[in-house]
Image 1: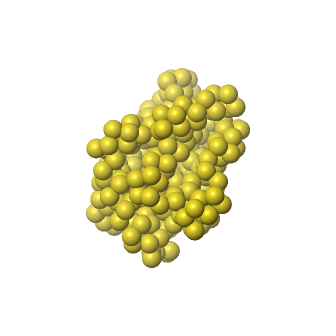
Image 2: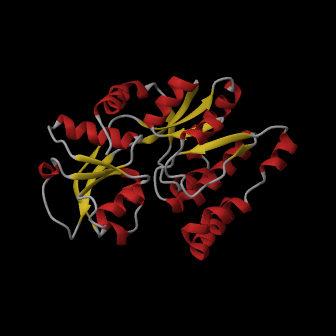
Length: 286
Protein backbone atom coordinates (compact mmCIF):
# COMPACT_ATOMS: atom_id res chain seq x y z
CA UNK A 1 0.00 0.00 0.00
CA UNK A 2 2.72 2.46 0.99
CA UNK A 3 4.69 1.74 -2.19
CA UNK A 4 1.57 2.42 -4.25
CA UNK A 5 1.09 5.79 -2.54
CA UNK A 6 4.74 6.72 -3.12
CA UNK A 7 4.74 5.65 -6.78
CA UNK A 8 1.48 7.50 -7.44
CA UNK A 9 2.63 10.68 -5.68
CA UNK A 10 5.97 10.75 -7.51
CA UNK A 11 4.23 10.16 -10.83
CA UNK A 12 1.95 13.14 -10.12
CA UNK A 13 5.01 15.32 -9.40
CA UNK A 14 6.77 14.24 -12.61
CA UNK A 15 3.69 14.71 -14.80
CA UNK A 16 2.22 17.93 -13.40
CA UNK A 17 5.29 19.64 -11.91
CA UNK A 18 5.47 21.44 -8.57
CA UNK A 19 2.89 24.12 -9.38
CA UNK A 20 -0.01 21.63 -9.73
CA UNK A 21 1.50 18.78 -7.74
CA UNK A 22 -0.05 19.65 -4.39
CA UNK A 23 -3.45 20.40 -5.94
CA UNK A 24 -3.61 17.02 -7.69
CA UNK A 25 -2.18 15.22 -4.63
CA UNK A 26 -4.87 16.64 -2.36
CA UNK A 27 -7.63 15.42 -4.70
CA UNK A 28 -6.35 11.86 -4.28
CA UNK A 29 -6.35 11.83 -0.47
CA UNK A 30 -9.21 10.55 1.74
CA UNK A 31 -11.81 13.30 2.00
CA UNK A 32 -12.09 14.84 5.47
CA UNK A 33 -15.90 14.62 5.52
CA UNK A 34 -15.80 10.87 4.81
CA UNK A 35 -13.30 10.25 7.60
CA UNK A 36 -15.39 12.38 9.93
CA UNK A 37 -18.49 10.36 9.08
CA UNK A 38 -16.67 7.09 9.79
CA UNK A 39 -14.93 8.25 13.00
CA UNK A 40 -17.27 11.13 14.03
CA UNK A 41 -14.26 13.46 14.15
CA UNK A 42 -10.88 13.97 12.52
CA UNK A 43 -7.50 15.07 13.84
CA UNK A 44 -5.80 17.57 11.58
CA UNK A 45 -2.04 17.30 11.18
CA UNK A 46 0.33 20.16 10.31
CA UNK A 47 3.86 19.42 9.11
CA UNK A 48 7.05 21.46 8.87
CA UNK A 49 9.26 18.98 6.98
CA UNK A 50 13.02 18.52 6.83
CA UNK A 51 13.70 18.42 3.13
CA UNK A 52 12.30 19.28 -0.28
CA UNK A 53 8.81 19.60 -1.73
CA UNK A 54 9.17 16.24 -3.45
CA UNK A 55 9.15 14.58 -0.01
CA UNK A 56 5.44 15.41 0.25
CA UNK A 57 4.82 12.02 -1.37
CA UNK A 58 6.61 10.35 1.53
CA UNK A 59 4.68 12.38 4.11
CA UNK A 60 1.38 11.33 2.55
CA UNK A 61 2.41 7.71 3.06
CA UNK A 62 3.69 8.35 6.62
CA UNK A 63 0.37 9.87 7.71
CA UNK A 64 -1.50 6.95 6.12
CA UNK A 65 0.79 4.51 7.96
CA UNK A 66 0.24 6.30 11.29
CA UNK A 67 -3.51 6.42 10.70
CA UNK A 68 -3.56 2.65 10.29
CA UNK A 69 -1.19 1.96 13.20
CA UNK A 70 -3.07 3.96 15.82
CA UNK A 71 -6.58 3.60 14.40
CA UNK A 72 -7.24 7.33 14.54
CA UNK A 73 -8.45 9.62 11.70
CA UNK A 74 -5.32 11.70 11.12
CA UNK A 75 -5.78 14.13 8.21
CA UNK A 76 -3.03 16.05 6.43
CA UNK A 77 -3.59 18.19 3.35
CA UNK A 78 -0.30 19.12 1.63
CA UNK A 79 -0.12 22.61 0.17
CA UNK A 80 2.51 24.21 -2.04
CA UNK A 81 3.87 26.36 0.80
CA UNK A 82 4.14 23.52 3.29
CA UNK A 83 7.93 23.90 3.52
CA UNK A 84 7.22 26.85 5.80
CA UNK A 85 4.67 25.83 8.43
CA UNK A 86 2.29 28.73 8.91
CA UNK A 87 1.01 29.70 12.35
CA UNK A 88 -2.62 29.48 11.23
CA UNK A 89 -2.18 25.92 9.96
CA UNK A 90 -0.47 24.87 13.18
CA UNK A 91 -3.17 26.35 15.39
CA UNK A 92 -5.92 24.55 13.46
CA UNK A 93 -4.18 21.22 13.99
CA UNK A 94 -4.34 18.66 16.78
CA UNK A 95 -1.02 17.05 15.80
CA UNK A 96 1.95 19.14 14.65
CA UNK A 97 5.44 18.22 13.46
CA UNK A 98 7.54 21.35 13.89
CA UNK A 99 11.09 22.64 14.05
CA UNK A 100 12.39 23.54 17.56
CA UNK A 101 11.53 27.26 17.32
CA UNK A 102 7.93 26.65 16.27
CA UNK A 103 7.64 23.80 18.77
CA UNK A 104 8.63 26.13 21.61
CA UNK A 105 6.04 28.66 20.49
CA UNK A 106 3.28 26.05 20.33
CA UNK A 107 4.21 24.57 23.72
CA UNK A 108 4.54 27.93 25.48
CA UNK A 109 1.67 29.86 23.92
CA UNK A 110 -0.89 27.22 22.95
CA UNK A 111 -0.44 24.27 25.28
CA UNK A 112 0.91 21.71 22.85
CA UNK A 113 2.78 18.79 24.42
CA UNK A 114 5.93 17.24 22.83
CA UNK A 115 5.62 13.47 22.40
CA UNK A 116 8.57 12.47 20.17
CA UNK A 117 11.53 14.01 18.36
CA UNK A 118 13.60 13.17 15.31
CA UNK A 119 16.94 11.51 15.97
CA UNK A 120 18.46 13.92 13.44
CA UNK A 121 19.45 17.31 14.89
CA UNK A 122 18.48 20.49 13.05
CA UNK A 123 21.71 21.81 11.53
CA UNK A 124 22.42 24.82 9.32
CA UNK A 125 24.89 25.68 6.55
CA UNK A 126 26.15 28.98 5.16
CA UNK A 127 26.26 28.80 1.34
CA UNK A 128 27.06 31.01 -1.62
CA UNK A 129 26.89 30.67 -5.41
CA UNK A 130 29.77 28.53 -6.67
CA UNK A 131 30.51 30.78 -9.65
CA UNK A 132 29.98 33.97 -7.68
CA UNK A 133 32.41 36.10 -5.72
CA UNK A 134 34.50 33.82 -3.52
CA UNK A 135 35.29 34.58 0.09
CA UNK A 136 35.73 33.11 3.53
CA UNK A 137 33.11 33.24 6.27
CA UNK A 138 34.67 36.45 7.59
CA UNK A 139 33.60 38.28 4.41
CA UNK A 140 29.96 37.82 5.43
CA UNK A 141 30.22 40.93 7.62
CA UNK A 142 27.68 43.49 6.28
CA UNK A 143 27.03 41.26 3.25
CA UNK A 144 23.43 40.36 2.31
CA UNK A 145 22.41 36.98 3.80
CA UNK A 146 19.20 35.26 2.67
CA UNK A 147 17.34 33.60 5.57
CA UNK A 148 13.91 32.15 6.39
CA UNK A 149 12.60 33.96 9.51
CA UNK A 150 10.98 32.03 12.34
CA UNK A 151 12.82 28.76 11.68
CA UNK A 152 15.24 27.34 14.23
CA UNK A 153 17.98 26.70 11.68
CA UNK A 154 17.93 30.43 10.92
CA UNK A 155 18.06 31.34 14.61
CA UNK A 156 20.99 28.97 15.15
CA UNK A 157 22.87 30.27 12.12
CA UNK A 158 22.48 33.92 13.07
CA UNK A 159 23.30 33.24 16.71
CA UNK A 160 26.50 31.45 15.70
CA UNK A 161 27.53 34.26 13.35
CA UNK A 162 26.91 36.96 15.96
CA UNK A 163 28.84 34.96 18.57
CA UNK A 164 31.79 35.12 16.17
CA UNK A 165 31.45 38.86 15.81
CA UNK A 166 29.97 38.69 12.30
CA UNK A 167 27.03 40.95 11.43
CA UNK A 168 25.51 40.18 8.01
CA UNK A 169 22.73 42.19 6.40
CA UNK A 170 19.78 39.87 6.96
CA UNK A 171 17.41 39.49 3.99
CA UNK A 172 14.19 37.49 4.64
CA UNK A 173 12.86 34.89 2.21
CA UNK A 174 9.58 32.95 2.36
CA UNK A 175 11.10 29.47 1.92
CA UNK A 176 14.50 27.77 1.75
CA UNK A 177 14.01 27.40 -1.99
CA UNK A 178 13.43 31.13 -2.37
CA UNK A 179 16.49 31.87 -0.23
CA UNK A 180 18.69 29.71 -2.47
CA UNK A 181 17.17 31.23 -5.59
CA UNK A 182 18.15 34.67 -4.30
CA UNK A 183 21.72 33.45 -3.77
CA UNK A 184 21.98 31.84 -7.21
CA UNK A 185 20.53 34.95 -8.87
CA UNK A 186 23.08 37.12 -6.99
CA UNK A 187 20.42 39.10 -5.14
CA UNK A 188 22.14 38.04 -1.91
CA UNK A 189 25.78 37.03 -1.62
CA UNK A 190 25.21 34.38 1.08
CA UNK A 191 22.36 32.24 2.36
CA UNK A 192 21.53 30.19 5.44
CA UNK A 193 20.21 26.75 4.61
CA UNK A 194 18.70 24.03 6.78
CA UNK A 195 20.98 20.98 6.69
CA UNK A 196 18.21 18.54 5.78
CA UNK A 197 17.04 20.74 2.90
CA UNK A 198 20.62 21.05 1.68
CA UNK A 199 21.04 17.28 1.66
CA UNK A 200 17.69 16.84 -0.11
CA UNK A 201 18.71 19.04 -3.04
CA UNK A 202 19.49 17.42 -6.36
CA UNK A 203 23.11 16.97 -7.43
CA UNK A 204 22.49 19.61 -10.10
CA UNK A 205 21.52 22.23 -7.49
CA UNK A 206 24.37 21.28 -5.15
CA UNK A 207 26.88 21.82 -7.94
CA UNK A 208 25.72 25.43 -8.17
CA UNK A 209 26.40 26.08 -4.48
CA UNK A 210 29.59 26.61 -2.48
CA UNK A 211 29.57 25.41 1.12
CA UNK A 212 31.06 28.28 3.16
CA UNK A 213 30.53 26.98 6.72
CA UNK A 214 28.67 24.34 8.71
CA UNK A 215 26.88 22.34 9.59
CA UNK A 216 26.32 24.01 12.95
CA UNK A 217 23.88 22.18 15.21
CA UNK A 218 22.65 21.56 18.75
CA UNK A 219 20.87 18.64 20.38
CA UNK A 220 17.47 20.03 19.35
CA UNK A 221 15.50 18.47 16.49
CA UNK A 222 12.08 18.55 14.85
CA UNK A 223 9.37 17.54 17.34
CA UNK A 224 5.95 15.88 17.18
CA UNK A 225 3.46 17.68 19.43
CA UNK A 226 -0.16 16.99 20.37
CA UNK A 227 -2.63 19.60 21.57
CA UNK A 228 -3.25 19.48 25.32
CA UNK A 229 -6.38 17.50 26.14
CA UNK A 230 -5.52 14.69 23.70
CA UNK A 231 -3.36 12.59 26.03
CA UNK A 232 -4.54 9.23 24.67
CA UNK A 233 -3.84 10.28 21.10
CA UNK A 234 -0.38 11.49 22.21
CA UNK A 235 0.41 8.13 23.80
CA UNK A 236 -0.75 6.23 20.72
CA UNK A 237 1.27 8.48 18.44
CA UNK A 238 4.41 8.16 20.58
CA UNK A 239 4.16 4.36 20.62
CA UNK A 240 3.70 4.16 16.85
CA UNK A 241 6.56 6.59 16.10
CA UNK A 242 9.03 4.87 18.43
CA UNK A 243 8.27 1.53 16.80
CA UNK A 244 8.36 2.81 13.24
CA UNK A 245 12.00 1.91 12.62
CA UNK A 246 11.30 -1.70 13.65
CA UNK A 247 8.50 -2.04 11.11
CA UNK A 248 9.62 -2.94 7.58
CA UNK A 249 7.19 -0.60 5.84
CA UNK A 250 7.71 2.11 8.45
CA UNK A 251 11.49 1.98 8.10
CA UNK A 252 11.19 2.39 4.32
CA UNK A 253 8.96 5.44 4.81
CA UNK A 254 11.50 7.09 7.10
CA UNK A 255 13.95 7.11 4.21
CA UNK A 256 11.35 8.77 2.00
CA UNK A 257 11.11 11.78 4.33
CA UNK A 258 14.83 12.00 5.13
CA UNK A 259 14.58 10.94 8.78
CA UNK A 260 16.71 8.31 10.54
CA UNK A 261 14.13 7.61 13.25
CA UNK A 262 12.25 8.96 16.26
CA UNK A 263 13.01 9.09 19.98
CA UNK A 264 11.20 10.25 23.09
CA UNK A 265 11.18 13.99 23.63
CA UNK A 266 13.42 14.59 26.63
CA UNK A 267 12.93 18.32 27.15
CA UNK A 268 15.86 19.33 24.95
CA UNK A 269 13.83 22.26 23.63
CA UNK A 270 14.71 24.08 26.85
CA UNK A 271 18.38 23.92 25.86
CA UNK A 272 17.78 26.14 22.83
CA UNK A 273 15.25 28.53 24.34
CA UNK A 274 17.96 31.19 24.80
CA UNK A 275 18.85 31.03 21.10
CA UNK A 276 15.25 31.52 20.00
CA UNK A 277 14.75 34.35 22.50
CA UNK A 278 18.01 36.02 21.45
CA UNK A 279 16.99 35.97 17.79
CA UNK A 280 13.61 37.48 18.58
CA UNK A 281 15.24 40.37 20.46
CA UNK A 282 18.45 40.95 18.53
CA UNK A 283 17.65 40.41 14.84
CA UNK A 284 15.78 42.87 12.67
CA UNK A 285 14.77 41.78 9.18
CA UNK A 286 15.05 44.24 6.34
